[in-house]
Image (cartoon, rainbow, N blue to C red):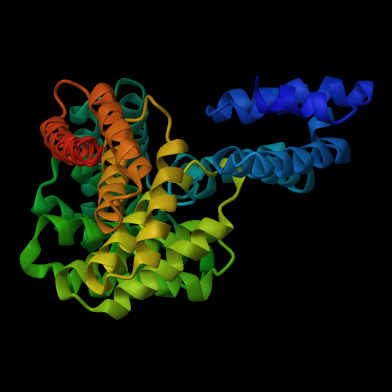
Length: 417
């Protein structure tokens, strides 16, 4: 029996409420934003006060039953509907999808009509190549687009164009190069992307939205280079963290959970190099804030929970504070529960949960439920992992260690009898 069925049995419902509940259930179970939007657009009553009241009752009922993952999913659904009611459906789903304010090159020629014809042709070519890449996903198309943007930047007429046009082209060049770097992982490619984002930042002037977008992407690219080039990692992370802090200063209300998690990720990465506990403590605080501020379907919620759990485990290993371990288990369990079975990250998250459970079991071997849950999590990780997953062997080895503990426990219990 589903939560909704139990809810119907426990609380008398008026006919209009009975009509709404299936729509709420359908919406809450839909992970695809396009399908979710169709549901909302086809059911205007979802934007009414009655739907909000029903969702609040469902959230309360879910928590009574101990279903925190369901409760948080319903809270995300409520937040989506409230935003759609106040800001409009279009804006609500743009925010839910995390529409990137930097990827706005398509209309630049309509806005800047005095661009020389030769440059305009090159821009059209670059945009066409990007569109083809978006459909076909072929790396060579993205390469060609990135090279086309580079040629535009080097064109003799480019320096005399409007400042706004220069900014749009530089952002487009930086974004294309960044995406290509994500595919190739070449350090020199990352360095070129960093330089382009720095140039874009210099062109952004006093526009808060433009500066926030450029600073954010600069931070992301610096973090990627830090991971790829260890020799310069600390300097890159210092600059990335400074960039993320500036975004928070200039745009404190902009996608709050994203601002918090970006800064937290930078601090956690720096902690892993320097061992500075202050960075780890701040990262945990920021991830906690991000968790509390997640809204609008919260597609990033499992990622935030996973990262928070990882930080808590790092701090437990440093300080041996069992409270950190217990919070890590709760957080990692929720991260796994909120991760779709089709997501490639789920096996890794189940493994992380199992490792935390085993650490807790080793502190209290009388609690056999911890070990049983760890074994179940690892069995699920192995079952869900692709045959080509390089971590599959690691999951199997972890399961073997858990089974050793299990048979030791069973042997001791049998011996006591």
